[in-house]
Length: 249
Image 1 (tube, rainbow, N blue to C red):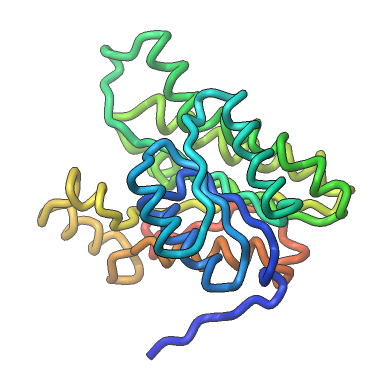
Image 2 (image 1 turned 90 degrees about the vertical axis):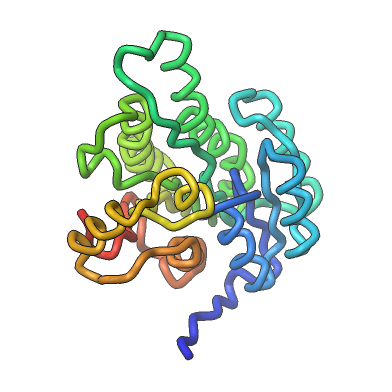
């Protein structure tokens, strides 16, 4: 049986995870809770959020992350309950498919708000507390999609490419305060949504042919990298992107 790491530096520390009610985000919440962290999750899905809250002892706050005022209020509420945030995990996103022809300016702006904009403003909201402690880790979740030049979702891949630029820019600006900023870049992770909507025998065969490691990836594979980046074990890692794709790209 494989045994995974325990991180003492995460115990009794406050962590905020956006999009923590399902998929990769739910696994991240579960893994932080198992480390003894105080975990707050922010999500638009009330039913799933309440279930995660009950199952893992996390604190759920309902919020549509496109509403920046509501996002700021949610983060303030969690910090009031748990104290200053040690780690922020900007995980929330939606990889809805769309053609070039159907994209309107309003849809484009909505995709940026859904997949990119909230990452900056969530970071902005936790930075004062991190600066006061001279300690903190921000982990932005990106996507391998733009590196692979995947089609069928141009607004999504644009936003996810920008996540890596945002990460490097923030890391430079806050490094002198002892705050680290990194990206985690998942490959094709077999969440319930991915399996239901897009996994087929043909696509699985192609994926296994292209990955170096001939196994499908699951949310815990991403969550364990996030734990390491939040913990003191990665104390000198910043402005980097860590790819978890089984060697696909």
